[in-house]
Image 1 (cartoon, rainbow, N blue to C red):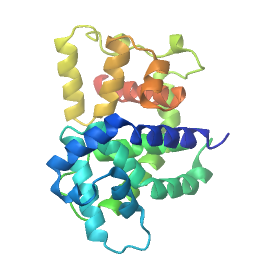
Image 2: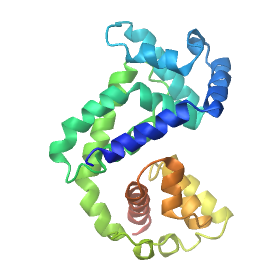
Image 3: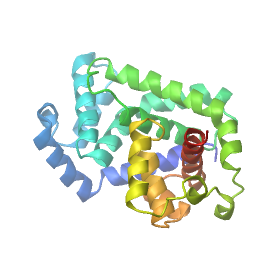
Image 4: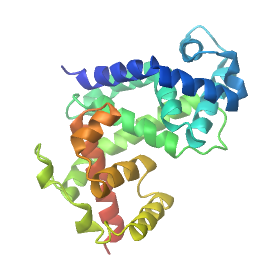
Length: 245
């Protein structure tokens, strides 16, 4: 079961890739990104991006950049899914490379998943070259940094023992957590300052404001419960460290 998290993520991606909703969104994406129109289906695009014999790296980077641009331009989930699948062989290789420094392998690929998402969220759209290699290398740096700081973050945010009742509450860190506009402005400010990412804010708002459980959030994202918890706890730790004098 060591690779359960990795296999679960891939299973969810493949299921979503085959859905009619995904195919409809992909057709809409082609209307906004001309460079992708040479690939009428997502499968054709991925086949080219996966081809190890193709040395047309500039074309591959152009396609990856188009997907990153689409991620920031209204095709978030669709573009991220395609980017994740496109880089899957490299990310899987990274998984095996990082096993020696991970405390456990159960959720290592989920750490890679989040680091990859953060890299795309914070991508400088002025960077159009060497997209594939930069995504790989920067994701690796993020995972190593996250693994190294995990213990510190868990000490700040409180250690989870499988009970949501023991987790840190947003209201303890931000007293205005339920005050709508003030809370939204604070979250936007934290994102702009780089304290948390867009995905962090999504989890915080869905859980702290709308009361959606961690288990349901995990189900929505197609990833393990403890991975979502750790992402949430890490975000609160960053907020606390930023707000406390």
